[in-house]
Length: 421
Ligand code: PMP
Image (cartoon, rainbow, N blue to C red):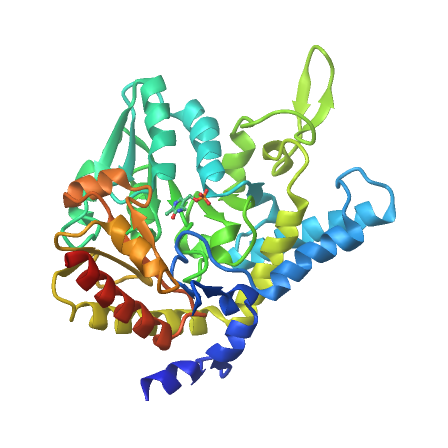
């Protein structure tokens, strides 16, 4: 009964969600691993790509590959148009007010570094503070740590409770006038916790702090409206949202970006250069030095079209159902403890098994064709807080099925009994 519910459901917008049909869009999902169907449950690390994204990228190389910006010939103009169209598609997707607020980066990591080095180095001074949370990915820790070390500023950390929920009362206490920047994730990659980022931004703004939201795990799970959130900066990666690797986005409020110095320098980010002096280009080009990843922009745009076609409400519904079902099943296995039990969670299921090493479990699961991630998930300080060396993490996408959850659970049971022998 449950299976049919998930396979064919009518969404709020009246669209039919047919998971079998959706799976046909993803060629990799028909692969066999060790003679068994691939059960891909590492979507928080990277998502698989629909054929429309793959085709958009190959089309670019087959039909109009060329460098953009100053090309006067047809295929360069086509490539330039594709790049501009991608920016507009992203603007609309996150409801930014102005396309100049969209900057292409290599990914979330580069987007956060851009803000830390450009905004951070010009606004954070000795004695100031930067506030992050205990559940941040290393990409949202290390750039701020480097900034604070170099500026003699202090990095402070909002604690999480035993369920993996942000301690909002502690956040309010830590939010002093010294805090110049607050940087938190929208959704935790290790725990799945969905943070109340709108409230975080509201409180930080009341305090006069600027806010960066690491949206790497949120952009493909939930409707992100940067205007409604009020975020000053919002960062995400193409490869987590069914697009290619090596492309990402930094959204920044125009008035902040305009006042910020460039992060990298070279071609394209200038409007005029002499040996004595350089005049920088306007935003967003001021932050896009060098030949852009045109292939990536075409791919991320096709990924957005794909998400829009499926619908974020259908995606959310399917992923919630998978998470609930997997959580219920895994809770029945003796010795398994879920890490990250906040009520408001995305489809990430992190767990430890009494007496067993996460890595061994991951390797065993692969023999059943089940791909999961094991270890610290680039959140070593968070693992230290939970007092564990790492977890096994199964993360679900809308193209996963309840039948795959069953395969995963059975494989996990077998792995545990073999490893315990
Ligand atoms: N933040 C979070 C929450 C993430 O999950 C990731 C990717 N694992 C990153 C930042 C870094 O993203 P990327 O490696 O694509 O730059």
